[in-house]
Every structure is written in C-alpha cells, then in structure tokens.
Image 1 (cartoon, helix red, strand yellow):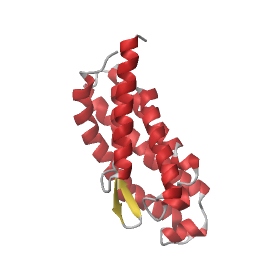
Image 2 (image 1 turned 180 degrees about the vertical axis):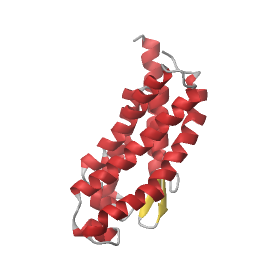
Image 3 (image 1 turned 60 degrees about the vertical axis):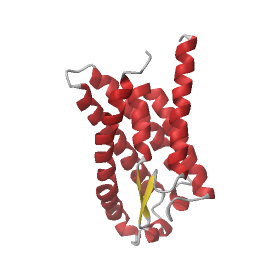
Image 4 (image 1 turned 90 degrees about the vertical axis):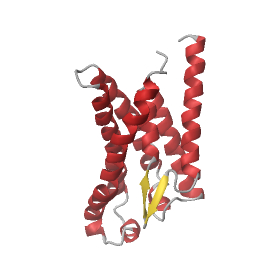
Length: 196
C-alpha cells in the first residue's frame, strides 16, 4: 500500500467514523424512536462504507458503531431496552462488525457476476441490514430469555419470540428496504472516487 493510498484510506475511515459519531449523538439522525424501539439508520452508513472501502474497513466502521452502542447502554441509552440488552458486548458489537463483513464480501462477490453494479449493491445492502436485525434480535432471544426483557417488550417469556418476530417485520424490514434504496444511491457515485 502506497503512502498516498494509506493516507486516503485513513482520511475516508475518519470521515465515516465522524458520521457514525454524529448519527449516534444527534437526536433523530441515527435512531428514530418508536415506542420502546428505535428505527435505526446508522446501519446504512456501515453498509456504504463496506461497499466503498471494502469489508475490513466496513467491519471497522461497524465496530465503532457497536462500541458506541455498548458505551451508551451504560451512559445514555437510546431506548428503554438498551440497558437491558446492549450492555452485552456480543449483542452490541458483533452484529455491527458483521454488517461490514457480510456487505463487503457479498458486494465484492456480486461485482464478479453479470449483475449490474446497482443490483449487486441493492442485494449487498439488503443482506447487511438483515444481518444486523437477525443477529441482534436472535442474540437477544438467546441471551435474554428472562422476565425483565420480556416485560420491556410488554409480554411474557412465552411470547418473547413472537414479539421479536414482530420487531423483525416492523423495524427490520423497513430498515432493510431503506438500506437497499439509500445504499446504492450513495455508494455508486462514491465508487468513482475509490483509489484501489
């Protein structure tokens, strides 16, 4: 890696990290509260970073988001559920890192197929968003099948899985559609400035 390429990569990584920080702390920019849940838009930034910079840099950006989520669960939670579930680093950090890896590697693979680049970006964005939703909610179900989390979702332990599936439908699907639309719209023009 040349010195110029390294400086470019670090500056673009810093830019994406700054965007992630802003999204986490400016109200209604990264999290849109809907009852006890939050509709998340931050995953789109991670997805764009993964498609423009690659899977490793996407994972770094996702890891920054996960770390902020973990810290905020203790200091200034974004929802009533955050202190209950995002104080577990496996739930707070791992899915966010995997957004970058899944999106980046899938997009790189789809670029080698005959699919138009925009369609590949849509599929990769969709996969990245669903990775976050499925892993976060799946890990909540695995780690937190306890009365406190069930009560936060206004259900009992027997109904927790059904409620999490409803969250997939009400939050996960809109978040995935948002990513599939916005990801290519922003990533495609940024690809022109990518230095390989």
